[in-house]
Image (cartoon, rainbow, N blue to C red; front, side):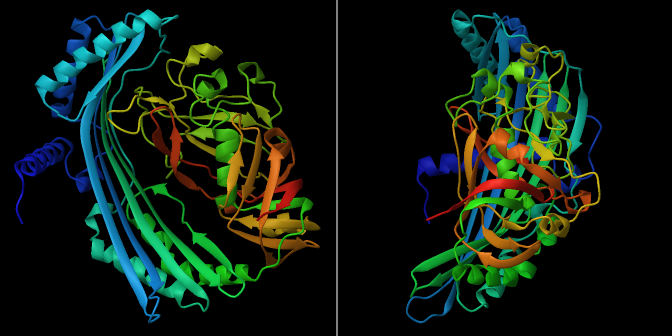
Length: 532
């Protein structure tokens, strides 16, 4: 194999950047026991170059993030050969790493931002100067100067609690786990194919501000998933059933706990049953929703709707604004008394959980809906004063060193019922209804008001008992109407923390992950539809 000079330079530069990142951040297993204490002195020294340069050029505030991101996707597709019928296992592995820094400043009352993937003292000083120049240029358009909520100064280190570094597990070992799951699912007659994957995302973050904060964080996210397809060629029907243990912030131990292979046969049997399941009879029905289904409904109808930048109309390009107004705070009846929603970046294993946000604010939890009434919005430092609050809710995040931090959804979860209540209790209270599990199709309008959600598997409920599987189900409602129909929430024994991994927002678009935990819930007289 030969390399062109261009390829050689690119590879050499990449290798040098990777070596520098390893030197600056340390090895993962060392990070596992490194919560608390002082952040890296070398990273602080580099950050000081940006902060000093920005201040000398006239910035009233500056912060710098020096970050590395590592991603790995190990996947396996198992389907029969068209001619021989022999089962083929087709692996794919994708691994990427990015490393660089971003400088954000306030000069002449306006934000400026610049970034680079060349981490050197000279480049850091140059980019800080660019950020100040951008801010001063933007100032001509700024109507009101940026106002930051007060924030304490922190010198700290945070690490996701984990036992096993996911990158320490070999790719053959991960593929072996996936092959067991696929083979087990494929053993069910009429299952046509199976696809599974293990996804890892790791962030090394360093934040420093001109206010004196120095914060180093190591965040580890993991999840596995299995998708099974069944086909009835004579009837021309295909169905898919997914098993997705919740994405979490944790080590590889979470993948093992997810037990893809142990659930594969059940998923295979359910997708085959779905093939011949009769269609739902549409109409007003009670619906009982499982956590891995309701998580998406919470995300779309509450998570996005209570982002303050959407409420203010600052964010509209990506999926619109919100039906809420700032004057609704403390007044709007969002749902029934069973509805208690929390915004939380401290939730154990939550996908948005970390020690500090990208404003350098220590993460926290706060009420969004209490006993059915709207009581809180998601905020960052430059938004808090707009609703008369003195502190940020710690919801500032950027998905890369070269992305501008802005307001993102934290973990937004529904509190479990306070009185003992099981899934069977919820079902027992339904005379004519549907039990819905998993995620299917969905649609919601640009103000998070009118929506429709499908699912991955559906069972009829008749006379208080779970019956046969049915198909082609979706439900439609308006956000306040739907949550007003909530009349039962299972207790904390059934609460599940369900993570979402690919939430998009912004222009240019950014990706974020968060969790929407809940217990099984019952909603009365929802408009149930027959699809396709």
